[in-house]
Length: 199
Figure 1 (cartoon, rainbow, N blue to C red):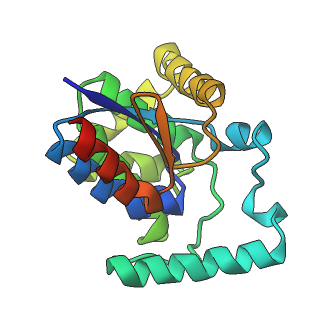
Figure 2 (cartoon, one colour; figure 1 turned 30 degrees about the vertical axis):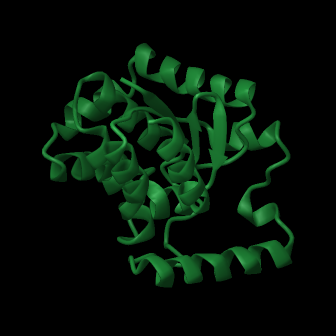
């Protein structure tokens, strides 16, 4: 089956805004999604990106405006100033990777993790919160959290990050189809256009 690589972060608002639409697109075109949660701060460190607090005020203000516009355009809930953001999302990324490695529904879990930040004002750096989110998705939360300590899970996260840097990814989400990068949920229309000519 054709596949698409999906580099993301469990705390990115743009990943949240695009996740459901991207997954629907992948399903419509019969694509297998290779989910690749990555260390976005490390990717930024070698690609010129900056954490939100370090960006110019003009850029911070425009980001806020864009979030508001996309929320209205897509008609989906999105807290513009979530209680827990920025948030360390490494453990949440591990959780999504562990779910995939154990053949669980990583898509459902990822959506829940993103909603936790951008809709529910929950702290995805908190272990008890991660357990509760996984259990709400019908998974064994304690088992999954324990799996985040496994070397195989952490190695995949590192590998995803190294791959992202090697192929020129510089932000989240990034969708990669046949070597072509599409950065940002606002490129989903362009991705759909490309897929319509290839699949």
